[in-house]
Length: 436
Image (tube, rainbow, N blue to C red; front, side, top):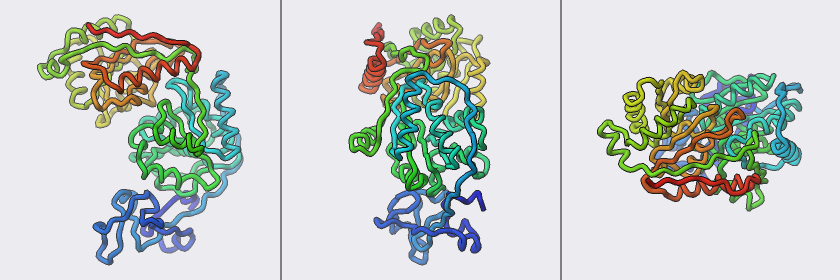
């Protein structure tokens, strides 16, 4: 029964005996929406008895207008000493860490707007530990499974308390003071957490998703605190900051003290036409060949899966002596291939935006092919750029945007990277542009 604390259930997910022990909630809100996911009930989704049901969150169990929802109130955990990380924060990081602890004590929701590679994860350690050590419950959530798995590995190493990892294909849930979960998994909780942290808050599918906003609101306790972590803020978060609903903390400097690498724009015409003929644009082949002379790993982004698959096969023909891999959201052994790239068993990794965030590859260079494609937003281009120069070992790197006509997303991404560098005290960091 302890695994039920802080969890939300439909009528048919519990036995009669369990329902008698649980607290009840109405299945629909005052505005006729699903209590769990906030989707408005529709008359066309009706059962034979006339009751309506929610199709939006039906995979988690059917919410019906003629049945109540059930939850078991969260209970305190034993006080403990949970943090075993012995690392040292920079002065900039320490300032954010201290501010987060103050914001939590004041019960104020907070946005941490920090550049890629600032060390956001380490900055939240102390406020997470404070909450757990006092007997509270913490959830660190992200929209992306890959990010959750990376966080789980890191926090397992840095915290002594048990941690549960929740995503669509993860093992069954068990109650722990620290939960790492995809944002969809928060739909299964109610009044469960004293502190909820949403990492990569600008990422799909969380951004602009009212259902997942509702999930966060339900999962945090009435007197709990929500903290949002991002390198690229959103219109919704900016609106909340202006309205006084969120307090913004900014960190424009990377942990190693070096500026963000600014993308270099390179003109590249007829990429698609060459690819269909199983050929590579000579200019691109030359740039890849030059990069391979450095010995540093190369991450190449393409906007579409079919394009990435074809290009990876083409690379194998052009560079037969190089280990080449491809990953997308559809790659079943994605984590295995990513690990091979990290260990340099693969030298060139072709990817879609699935690797735009949440992964660190020391010393990597990044090429973005067709950077002006409509699927690349300024936010995703900033995140992709953030893969370069993340390590103390090599805080610089080559970052190329190949395009056949620049656009607003490219220019906005470059402008924001420059502004962050200026805010960090680096002045104007130049970038090169080649049109030949």
